[in-house]
Length: 140
Ligand SMILES: CC(C)(COP(=O)(O)OP(=O)(O)OC[C@H]1O[C@@H](n2cnc3c(N)ncnc32)[C@H](O)[C@@H]1OP(=O)(O)O)[C@@H](O)C(=O)NCCC(=O)NCCS
View (cartoon, rainbow, N blue to C red):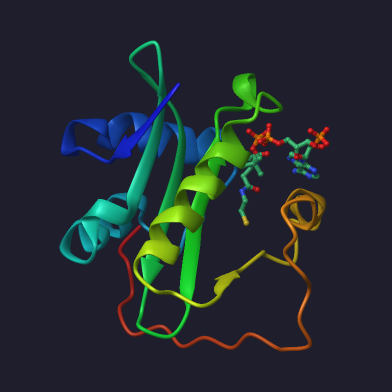
């Protein structure tokens, strides 16, 4: 298994991966999300590859205060094989290298199951509400 930065030729495979992992929502155009990430810290958009196929992704970022990881996904057929841990370890390594003091991950309220995964990686639940405001409406 290899972890490397995303390449544009991965686009279709990554969209299929996000779909299979249940991360695509009608209000987020995955191709627009990829385009935007390629304009900001593209080196932190990570892919895990197995035998030449895309099996995982993590869209990592650092805003100068906190680090973030979005679109953490592993091919359902490959889940439980350590790819998720490996992607998070690489995300943490790269963020620490940039001097990032803390990572935040957002978990959709309908995805409580993944809390166990992050707890296993020593992430703690915080007393905070998340609020958001859409600035660009993606066409679906
Ligand atoms: C979360 C996800 C990336 C984990 O990837 P993975 O490659 O299966 O994870 P690993 O094999 O490294 O780790 C598996 C460990 O985490 C736990 N785990 C994995 N997915 C879990 C889940 N959804 N809920 C609870 N625990 C989970 C397993 O119990 C296992 O622990 P163990 O080794 O002690 O048994 C993967 O399940 C996934 O793509 N889920 C769908 C997309 C998603 O929810 N992404 C996160 C958005 S916030």
